[in-house]
Image 1 (cartoon, helix red, strand yellow):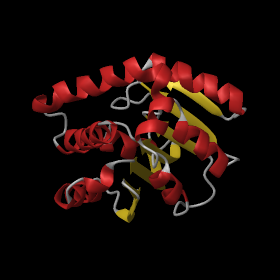
Image 2 (image 1 turned 90 degrees about the horizontal axis):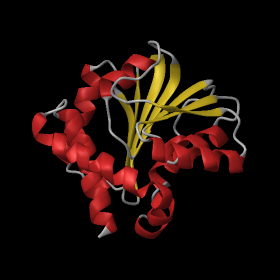
Image 3 (image 1 turned 120 degrees about the vertical axis):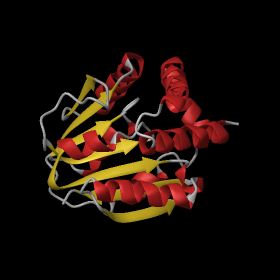
Image 4 (image 1 turned 180 degrees about the vertical axis):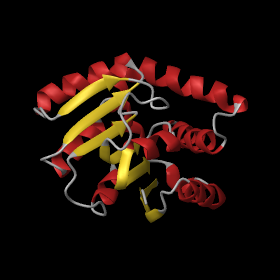
Length: 208
């Protein structure tokens, strides 16, 4: 049951961004937000139970990213899994983890304190309206979270990268994957790498 919910959630993220905020998909988006708020204090334990390959797509994608990142954004950071992994991968970079849920950020801060990552900061904000200037980051990452492609493009510098990872996204229909790639290309961010890792899907786009 957990894997089915994870896939439906990832599918909702992709459909929502391709439909550009369609009213028909708003109930699904509200359901996703409420689900994460209610699961905050046990989210990581459930992930270990339901999605053993939760971080597999992210791990594989990290090997394809350019070096030399100094400013990294993790939108929809949740409990901070991707942000902490990015801090390990790019030890000289400053990482900003953003999430709409105060409950999820509370868990992220707890784990960040335990793991001693002073370069990671946590900000409560809407990923559809990020509180950052244009071209503020070398890399923007979305790991199992809503995809606002226009905002991601706005905050990534020219030549910077956008990394999208969905842990249950490999089963998303090929047609939708192609449409997602075309959408990024139309925004001036062509996809330079796409791959599957276990049940996961990842793609890297680079701002022209």
